[in-house]
Image (cartoon, one colour):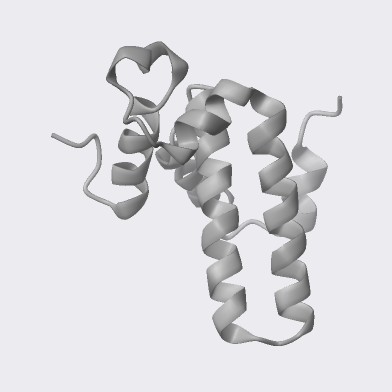
Length: 113
């Protein structure tokens, strides 16, 4: 049974099965498993590449590419979340917490590094 009935929850469940700690249960040809085996630099680089591709698609005002590149960015971001033991539901909770709050006020209230 999935931790969540949403597509994001189901995808997160699948990504968790590809983690190195699940090495004995990995599909022979898993793109995500290979990213995890190469370490954080591999999937973090993909997050950056996909973000750049989304920017280029948006600058071209190409709706189909914007959707596809956003899906790629979300996917690779979720690969990172799973690697660090985090879930998309946590991100959704954070977005819900920010709902109705001015972006400027929310940013000003963040702890300073």
